[in-house]
Length: 356
Image (cartoon, rainbow, N blue to C red; front, side, top):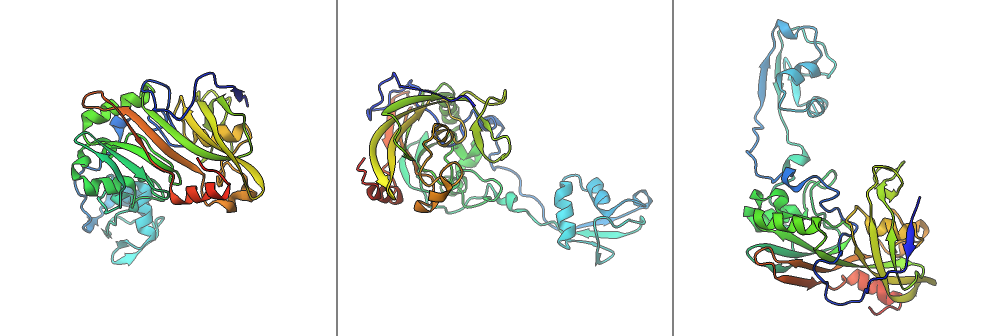
């Protein structure tokens, strides 16, 4: 796979982020790598009816399997969900549980007791603690802690940032994704901006798309890279492990460019480490982690892309979204926020003898 690394010709110092410069992305998913914001679920929908359903079959159902009959008569539910209800004993035929493959005669009485799946509660308000760095009529800036999932998905249908937003600001149910315009990985800490109105969200999405929203990240890596550099390598799905990303020559891979600057050096467990400040011209999934691993400097603690035999030294990837800059949607005025590294990251840096 082609990974081009060259000295970074652009100044890269810890100065105010310049709006319009290509500071973008993290290990998160931006608008480039997720469904269009306009197609997202907002969580505002009519409450489903979970009362029992009584079906009386006729001759037209004779000879059909139970699961096929239910799929035909109850098209509002997926076949997979109906199958699960059958397996869980929530479907009775003439008062008795039945198998999905049972053949119907055509005169049976079927009772289906619907039960919501975990995903049905994905957009429910929940009292999730939120660290609000800034709030006004148009935007909210959140300092996301480690362990908080941004958006509901398989395995994390509740307790997410989205659930907490809907609880604290109920009107966000009327904004796609409850105002979320970019994401951070569960085990990455740092700053996120949320739109309070559809107009503000549209403006913020455009800033992400034209690379004018500034974001910078601190990453602790194994090894000692040169003082600064620019990594240019397309990123796509890993060819074998589909939950991972990788530098790729696939025609489906997307162009990706990462800039980094070494801030400090240290040692951890007797091995060299370096603290990098990263900015990206693109916002691909896991971009910082994939790019730095591709040139031989994986993140400390990264169990997916890092050094497996050293993963015990830190329980997550050492990555923090430190700075956020944008043009305020209301008046275009430049705004900037900075969040200190969380306690576990700070303790890690102290162990490495680094004072950022």
